Image (cartoon, rainbow, N blue to C red; front, side, top):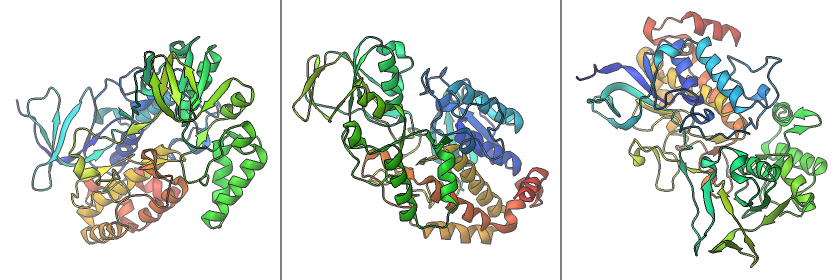
Length: 459
């Protein structure tokens, strides 16, 4: 039996952090929608019990609670540790759903197989197991970009075990083994610590020098210190110099721990938040190796000519930004960068948006919240203030597409990278441009609803 058309409704795909942020704003703004989640539970990558979850038993936030929780539901309860575990994060998402009444809008177990334009500005959404596709007024892609592991290939054959960090769930997988971790992001740092703690002999393979940022500076969460520093009316190069200099003064450069120094500025790459890697190297518990050159049975040969016998290789090498259910050319340019304005608004299809299609050195949840507000304002303005909507879309187009506000290290890892503070400021400036539209609801002919009036008064 054919499902009824939802040509007055929007479809939010994904019930992780980004999808929930967009859903909350849509509820507040009176925008009818369905939130489709392929798993049988919410939480996205933070739900270890579902195939979408990429967390492991020891996963904790790498940003502190004061700089991570949604603005509308701060993580300020005294029961929260500074860096909560993945269990606490999932519990926080459940509280978010309850607080903002999102459950009636979320459909679990609805795996989207295809999204495509359907004429007259509508979008056809095909769901696995449903005989007929649904028609929606618009689509918000909030399914994330941590689903397709990036796996490097090397000459030769390796006879040991190879896995990606996505398949890593427990330190038991590495106990009493000779382990090589490839990559040096936050997951790599966690896995190294787990392996060393489990009695393994551990090596870390890195292609370049990295900045290692401790979770606390002068006794305060690093994110809090940075937030205060960002309030200073100083040019970005000056702020960079101050933070970089302070880090080298307090912790020292990586070369002090017999590791390569980075050849880029601290804000030109995604930070690795760890206190442990330099300490483990200094204590002789972690061996640092250059990039892999080849495999030789049970041995791994490195580019400096050295080799090690290894039982397990863990590739913590990130993910390819793939959204498999939509034509790739709609979203990504040939160089792999998003075509969407600010990685949010499609330049041609007014009903196609994305939330969470960025990576940042700060709370992605808050950025997704601002992105959701931008999307909602464009939708409401399109109905109640179309001329303002046209002007704002034209202004977004003048920014020449994606959200990269400055250069980052030239690597696949940084195709979606933005500076959290600069990007947040830009989104908030754009939101202010909507003026009275920010107080309108779509379902009330433009009259502000109670939730939105409260928000405006709070600001």
